[in-house]
Length: 252
Image 1: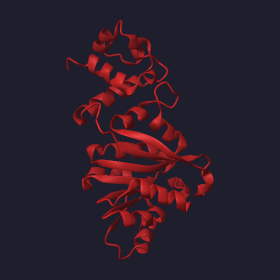
Image 2: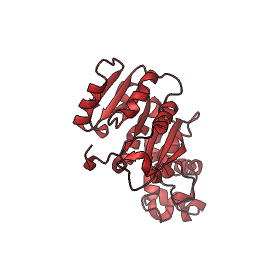
Image 3: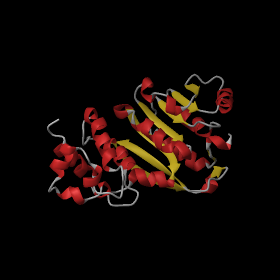
C-alpha cells in the first residue's frame, strides 16, 4: 500500500487473532472491518461473522482482497473512504480494524457516531490515541476525545503493540483498544449532540479555565461564583461536566 495512505500492515498472527476474538467472542450477525488491507484480519473475522463488510480505501488492495476470497458469500468488499460512509446504514454492528494513524481520530468519530448501533469495537490505534480514549480526568491525555468516547462506551487498553509487529514498522507504538457500550448512559442519545457541542467549547483552549472558554452571556452569568469557573475542563470528570452542562442550560 502506498505510504501516502498511511497504512502499516499488522503481521503478528497472535495479535490478529486477539483482535478477532475481542471483536467477536461469539458469532456476530454483522461485522464492519475498517482498513482491510491485504486481508490478514479479514481471514480471522470471517469464521466469526454471518456477514462481514470489509472497507478498504485503496482500490488495488480492495480488488486483491476480493480475489483472495472469490466464493465467500459472507464477505462484501467496499473500495471506499470510510470517512465518506454512513456506517449506520447496515444496522447494528461490531467494528474491528487496524486504523491508519493519520486519520484515526476522525475514523473513531465515525465509529462512535454509530450510537446505539455500535455493539462493540476492537481497534488497533496509535498508543497516544489509545491513551486519550481511556484517559482519566486530570491527566495530560484527557480531553474532548476522552469525553466523546466515554460518554457512550468504556474504552479499555488491552495490549501494547511494538513497531516490530507491523510491516513497514511505524515510528511509534500502537495499542489495542476495546470500546464496550456502557450499560447505562449518563445522557440520553437525543441529548448527546448538544452536550458534545458544549464540551467542545469547554476544551477549545485546553489550558484556559471554563470562565474563559464559555463566553455566552447566559453561561457567564450562571458560572459566576461557581467552583467550576476557575477550573480547566480537563479537571472535570465526565459526570461533573454533564452536571455543569445541565446547570448552565437547564432553561433551554
